[in-house]
Length: 314
Image (cartoon, rainbow, N blue to C red):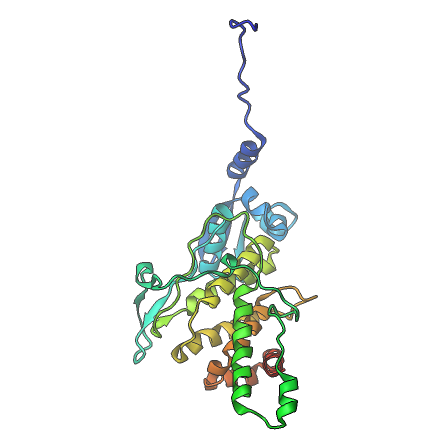
């Protein structure tokens, strides 16, 4: 029998995970100045996610010598969301604004409780992906070509049905498209679906897009992917009222002014919005501002739009 009087020494050494965590929060704070406001963040917290920012703080750049950096290419709200994510692994999106349809001046921010859905809904990450055969995320279907040959006469009602099916397929594939699984993020409350045309989602959309652009510039891949997924989630449940096309137009304008064409079919903001425009083009085309934007853009947006038009009619 073992000697009950034998002494046992407890190993009180900190685990490697707790040690690495403590190093993050005991590292020297670095000052970032954004729109005249100072943000102090632990250097190790920033360095673990961004090599460009790590070089800025710890390399040979002038910012490292001075001990602070002035960032001219980001607004305070976006950098604040980055700081929130750097420590918490989630971020708070922009606010929904209530606007009178007769008076565009904001009335107030919408309280979350007022936006609770009346029906149960699922986010893209909560639905099973459908099987795809065509590269756009939805299964190819027979369009009844043999039956049309037999009849020899065009059935207008069938063509109308095909148009609806094409839009519905694009919408369904948008909802089911999968960007990533957020394994390192905590449980994040789902976005709230809009329920009336007075709810302006412009700041919500832009908060995700602006954070994506920031993460793209400073090579913060996890944040880039999270922002892309968050934007997809909110677009998937957004009801596009005719009065709210301006929210999407503002988002499109920002994206095409601040991003470049995707490389090697990498999922990015442009491919996401192109897919969205594909199934909402009927509503968007009613807005003269959308048509003007395509003309003013002069190339990329118009080209992407025409690809989606061909996708709808093919």
